[in-house]
Structure formats: C-alpha cells, structure tokens
Image (cartoon, rainbow, N blue to C red; front, side):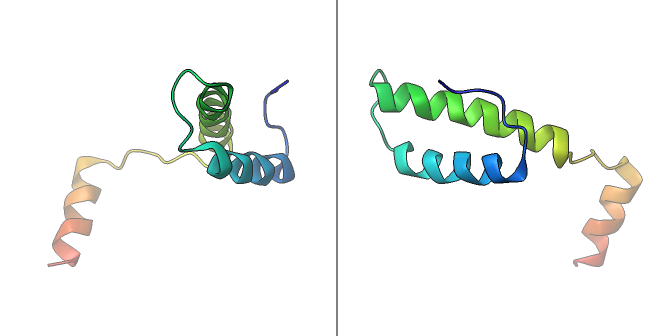
Length: 67
C-alpha cells in the first residue's frame, strides 16, 4: 500500500518506481499506481522544496538580465 513520503530515501524510491510505471495505460493497476505516486511525489516536493513566486519586479529583473 502506498503511504505519504517521509524521507529523502523514500522520495528517491518513489521517483524510481514512478519512472517504471509512467507509461502504464490509464485504468490498469500500474496506471493507478503512477497517478498515486505522482500525487505523493508532488506533495513531498512542495513541502520540502517549495518554489516561491517571485515579485513582479524581480521577475522583470531576471528577464532583463538574460537579454
């Protein structure tokens, strides 16, 4: 049974398994597992590696620096 990811090791194992079942057809056990793993991976990623939305001025500065 799948459970929330709590450690970096579990995160790595979940990513590995997700890559194995990624192309599974929808409606199959492997396809269902891929969907659940995606949700668990996303939840762990959002909690441990959040990406903050930049302030508009900062976003413009980064864009100007690349030109």
